Image (cartoon, rainbow, N blue to C red; front, top):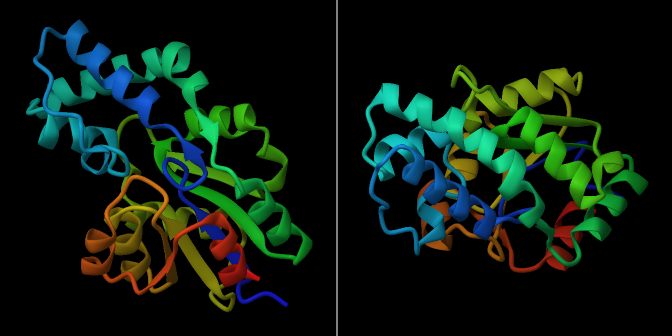
Length: 216
């Protein structure tokens, strides 16, 4: 028995333990541009939001500089950051259970779509997903409010399915509320529980095992 017809999974901090690779590539990008590093000790400030947002709001770059930084970051991540991803323990069992119970699942990430696809393949869980949905490099599709409808369209949803967005940050919660779909916040990731609650999150899973019980 399953509670949902469609489950959309955030990637960083939900499926993948990716913080160190992201932090490293942010610092390398700023080094290449001759810019100083902000305080990157709090992962919740830059894992979850779109890259353009991070480079402008956290790193203090102009819109033009932020676009340049994104292009540098993407190239660096492809070489140095990608292989630092690790699957959270227990997540493969969650994905397998969803498939066994007939739930359609997709990655719904602010990461660029091509990179998100590479990460999922690297983690060895690509075959579980019906779609991999991510942002565009030009920033035209980057917020969860835009990504959730995009993912549902790719999955062929018609508005009658029971849908849940699963993520670890306020951006995931905010997107789910905006799109009128359920939200399950995972607290083993990089976001803050208080931020997710403030953005409208009400249901939370401390572990992948708890997440599995909430889904099926």
